[in-house]
Image 1 (tube, one colour):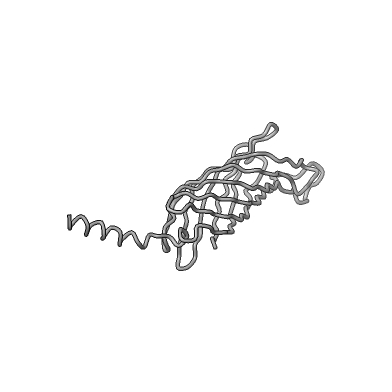
Image 2 (cartoon, rainbow, N blue to C red):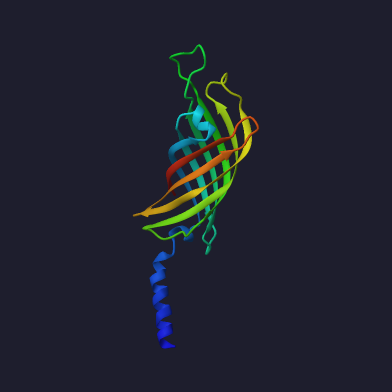
Length: 184
């Protein structure tokens, strides 16, 4: 019995540093940026683009799950110009989105690397910088991917890749932004 108590005490003392600073304050806001790669039929029409992200990460105490609210701006340049506009800027497809996602994975203490899986739904407003080139639409889409929370010194960050899919009657957009950011 004594050996069992010593063993349990030793395991608890070794696990004590794994109590997350983020878990003590389960809500964090963050910003991120990265590259966005078009896939499927979207790849035929657009060049790789970029992404800007604002996020609110709300962890559930004592559980390895958090609710993520994301606001993102993605921009993809057209591969070609319209007829009669040689030499001019071909314009870009823009996607402004707001999504609600669940992230599953441990929220460890600094310094640490904590992997997670993430997925959710979002509203997406697609448009163009050249309004003659396309219509503006709003539609529901979904996302799923993997990421990791990173802790270095007093900084808390994240890196993730998610597949975003916007199904539509006239078009289907699918792209993968790879995003790196900081949590505050």
